[in-house]
Length: 277
Image (cartoon, rainbow, N blue to C red; front, side, top):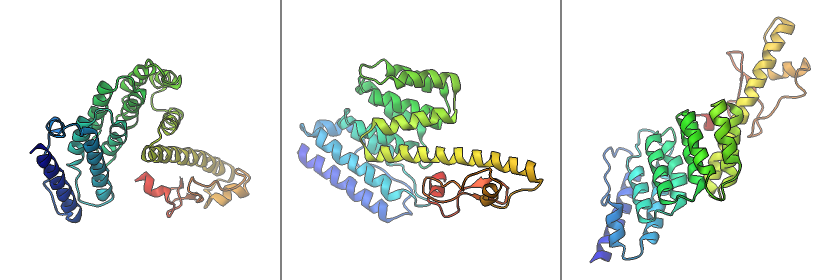
């Protein structure tokens, strides 16, 4: 009976996700079974396997709705909660699940933080979760005190890299500096084997590079105005004035342009523009 209920609940959930994927007008969403502990009891020893199934459902659910207008992500947190209740040691569900939740849509950093904190409680020796908690506080909430505390707590776990202590000190001292952001996302990229987390960290590093390039180009545009008493019309003017050896390229390989506001911007068709949105 337990197996029948378990399989029926899983099939019903998949059917509901498929229906919601096909119907963008669906506004109210409910899970057939919302209790992870109940499913764990019904799993008869197969909880880790069922957790993998629910994690796959969560990834499928998020990916099928990403980029679509007027859809919500109401099932995402329940799917992640069930996944981690079934297998509290499925680290990837905490790590990338938190990234899912904290993105501009669904914009639930509060739920992401709760998820990671549960992961830390269930896996106290996994310093990467303390690291992820620090990223959420630092990146999304600009809460540098709690970010520093998270890095410091993680630094005390056996096997944690020295960079954790460095980040705890620097975040507490410098707050949200671009240099600190580069260190944080570079460590996130280095510390994970999950391709989705790695892709996310790389994108953030690329955006930081764009920010640094645009700031530098704006400084040169200001210098050009001082020298020639007029604004440059293109980056090539800066090259001609020998303020630049050549027009730098963004991480996607596209040149920068000067916008109508007189400042440096990405080329309109550069793929990097999509990451900034």
